[in-house]
Amino acid sequence: MIKVAFVKFGGMSIGGTEKVLQTIASLLPKDRFQVDYYYTNGAPYIGSSHKHLDTEPSRVEFCKRHGVNCIPVRVGFKNVTVPTHDWVDTDFWDLFDESSYDLVVSGRSGHPEYPFHLIRKTPVIDTIHLSGMAENKSNTYRTVLISKEQRERWVAAGGPREKSTIIPNPVYIPNITKRIELDGGFVFGMHQRNNDNIFSPIPLQAYQKIESDDTLFVMIGGSRRYREQAAALNIQNIKFVPTTSDVNVIHEYLDSFNVYAHGRSDGEQCSTAIIEAMSHGLPVISHTAPSMGHLEQIGNAGAVVGSVEEYVSVMNRMMNDEEYFKTCSNNSIKRFNENYSVDSIINRYANLFEEAVK
Figure 1 (cartoon, rainbow, N blue to C red):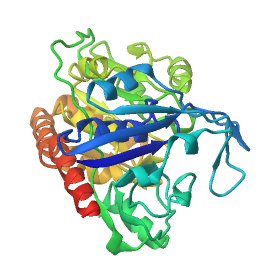
Figure 2 (cartoon, rainbow, N blue to C red):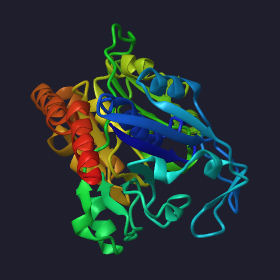
Figure 3 (tube, rainbow, N blue to C red):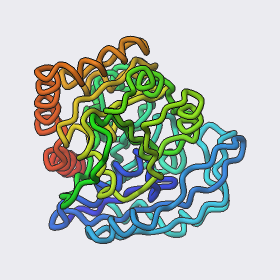
């Protein structure tokens, strides 16, 4: 039995990185792995007004149901004025002893970061979720990147290619028994966490130009700026669904969409939301951005465009060209099954962890 420790600041929130770690920890075969998950609250920052998402009780329960030992860690502040983003007033080291584990798993940005820079002996698997930052720590067995583009940026920043591997984000897909019935004809939609910094004006700018009595746009969660934009554009056929951590509700809505109309100002490395959409065979439209991992994800299941006008053109084509729509839909579910099914990804992680310990 291999003993694994997952460690994450704000690690039981509904953020994308956090849900990735929760999914890996939960779905690892428990006849081969004993899993502890150390998670902090979403403590305030020193040096920034940013506030990390806090613990979501349903995510704790999800992990517990799957045999994970969930260990809450106290943190008073996260100090981002120092390069390692130290935790202040924490009981982490009273709870955690690296000698008790065969392996430690992180989910982070790439730079030397607390507390991992102080874990020096136990093998570490780093999962990196941003790009442009890298380190070469002696006890890091492998660094997992989530797209080809991200890996190349990581290597360019100084990361050793031979110690890296690409594994897409594992995404838990529930077996839903119902769908949300929506009135409005052809349904475009997306879901996103409530964060003003990732708001993209492009999907609604495009939708406003094709809106009719036979269309509907559904926004699950997302920044308040989407509501303000819809009002400013006088968009009528739009439904806003409050942010939810309930994956069943998310998928009940996704199952009623015709097209996933994605947008994010900074782009994606490996979008959980896009994977969830593709599990329903939804064609996906998105736009160019600083990070372009979503281009790799979407591939022939839709289009990544460079302007609002091009976004409008693809929306119209999805509605009016039945053959194009069907082709993108079939490609979407095929890409999901071949590249992103959770069983195959968890199996890759399990094999990597066993290899690291050996």
